[in-house]
Length: 147
Image (cartoon, rainbow, N blue to C red; front, side, top):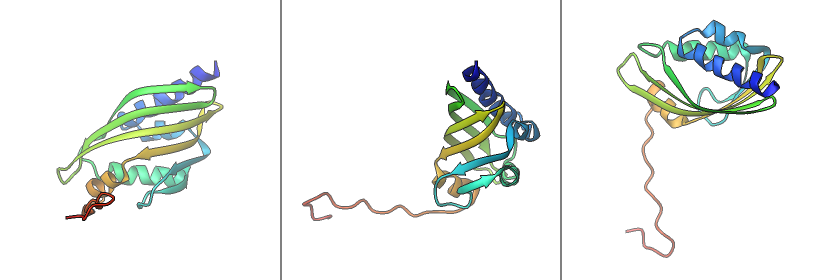
């Protein structure tokens, strides 16, 4: 029974986000929840619930319309849910945002207690934050001259 509750919370959370119902999505997170975004870009780190609300609001403000979430799979066992999804949106300056995500959610007492969010941080940096990163030349093959 706990597995189905976990799956339901995960599904409803992303349905709310897709519909632009940020407050309803936030209500599915525990007040002391932790959101972890690995990487080394401005939103990486370990965040509390209030920080996540602020970050989500700032990101949503960059879009012309609300992002559309497509959940491809939810695998749940006990309090853990693994969610594969993609998000599509257009930024206010006309760029296409197309991101693939993987979330690991821990759900306790009907609320998300912990989220680990995996995504293409370079895509966020380039499309949402306006940064450009120059490609690095591929290294020479072992034993090659690199020419």
